Amino acid sequence: MGRGGGGSTHVRSGPRPPAVRRAVRLGAVLGALVIAYAVITALVSRPAGHGYLDITSADGYGTRAVAEILRARGVTVTAGEQVPTAAPAPGPAGTSTGRTVVVTNPDLLSQAELDALVTSTRAGSDVVLVAPDPSVVVALGLPVTTGQPGEGDHGDESPPGCTLPEAGAAGSTTVGDSVTFARANGQDSQNGQGGRSGATRVELCYGDPGAARLAVLTPTRSDVGSGPTGRLVLLGGGGFLTNERLDETGNAALALGLLARAPRLEWVTPVVGAEDAVGTKGLSELLPDGFWFGSLQLLLVLVFLALWQGRRLGPPIEEPLPVVVRSTETVEGRGRLYAAAHARERAAAALRAGLRARLADRLGIGTAAAGSPWHTRGPDPTVLVASVAEQTGRSPMEIGPLLYGSDMAPTGYSQPPWPAHQGPPASWASPIPPSPVDVQAARTRRDAEGDVALVRLARALHELDRQVGRR
Image (cartoon, rainbow, N blue to C red; front, side, top):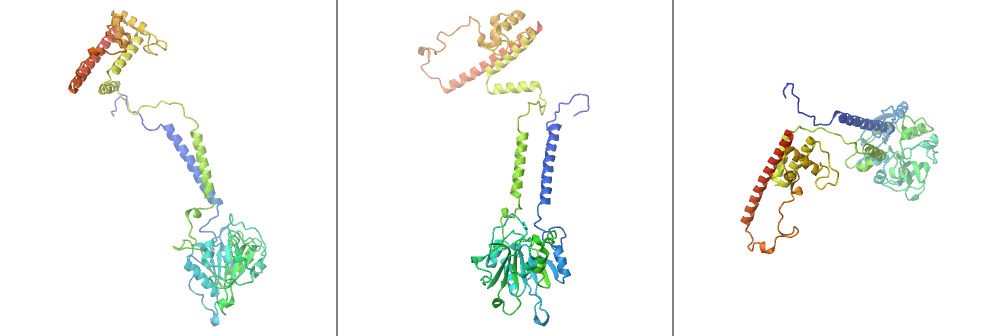
């Protein structure tokens, strides 16, 4: 483009600035809603990974407080991500010092790791599993069954309801009920029950016998021999061990009673599940609580937003053309289309309509009423023909066919000697049908005659327009 003073024909073809601003504002509002929803969800949801039951975390869901209390009582507390496989180091005079192993996510362990934990209980160690998945209990072959998990770790206060010394010393606690336990086959607690770990004594506390929140399984002496006896502790939830709930009712007493039996505590927090983990879950089970409810809310918001924006069609607006095309190019292009389609009658009608509009404008003739036999919105034919004949000095019989074609033919126009609804008499028909070559020649001749007639009509209309304009 030059820098001269001439005007430019360039027109912006993209969206207008107001439309761009509206789109940006709408995107900003949607982004703000998504970010706000994510922040609120993160604040109100319980963390399920790093931080929850972490002995190095000092926040509300960590367990640093119970770890420090145990260290103050002389218990060595260590943290790790793998289940210990080495046997406890022997103490003086060949006695075992023992240890306590706490696993916060037992469903991430493999079958081999679970078997190692069972072996350690028979060797004199305590194993504490926090909210074990039903698949873990089945893999261990324990003489207990698990109940359906509730909505979460409610932590309602409940009395012990059992003879376990630690539970009797703690009294009422808020052990969670994410998982509940019951005896298999309905046997009582005094009878030894078989399992993968051998004969086992089962003690159920905190809750009904069919939905207890704490289960302690102790191998019998005949199974472990004369050595020390360990035990397997199943917790329905780990909320009572956290920093924010440790000081409630008898939570601290129960936690110390279960975890301080041995001089060494190993806190295992599996982060990544093993390839053959017994608690392998599907994608839907790995989604956090409230995911589908939140997705439903987001879907409703999107539906309401669509209804709000699409409640009606906006008013018609005029938009600029992407490019400016000269009128001569439009006329020439349309003429080529008429020529390619051999639409001579349509081209003639367009020429006549354009001339009628220009003549009516020059002569000051109004439009005819609707229902006119020639044009519903054009000028009155009689008035237009009379005015043009007066201005040019030509006969109305000549002006009528020029402006309106055969619809306004002169009265003396010759008609064929047979009715219009019938064809020519049979005697007039040629007894020999024409050949394809003759048909093609006749068609070519007719097209040429039609083109010549159209050119003559255009010249005549142009001359008529020139004469009226000159007057």
